[in-house]
Image 1 (cartoon, rainbow over the protein chains, first blue to last red):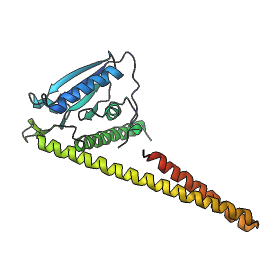
Image 2 (image 1 turned 45 degrees about the vertical axis):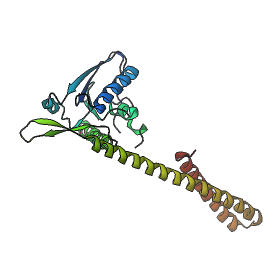
Image 3 (image 1 turned 180 degrees about the vertical axis):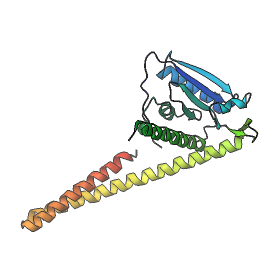
Image 4 (image 1 turned 90 degrees about the horizontal axis):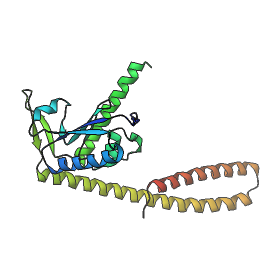
Length: 105
Length: 132
């Protein structure tokens, strides 16, 4: 089981969402991310959207293999969540806002 | 275990968890493209077509149906087991009333304990596989 990240009130979460332009899953990922952040990290997050169709080389920075992919840059350690984030529980576990054991397969 | 070794183990566990999450995301058709290297250090995005996405979604639906069938089967199995165990429990009570010898009593007590354990297991099986 991976450790649960304790959210500190002053801590800013730096997130980066890798997308493939405005494909349905990429749009859904952005909407879902906004909803999750507003609910769990209100006023304490930044989101940078990186369009890999326009800048595919940027995939190297975080070793991205599929889109959409969300990367938590800060707080460390870096965490990745692949997919459109429609499964909120899985996204919260990936971001370490929920313990892994609570998610069903 | 040293602190460094523990850190490495934690990092490997996190990588495995991410790989598992990616497998699940692909299986559930939550992605719409892969980043592919061209062999010269450059990358491009290979977008999945609608047909492929539909195929992934169909696979996901089939998995969900199979899971649901398994869950229903386990639930019905638990209910059947509980009914049979209830009947065995009633029979055991009758035998216990009639068999007063110490050896028979010990054997019946043992049976009763096993029966109680089986009932708890069947109850757990029914609890984790509820059907409406």
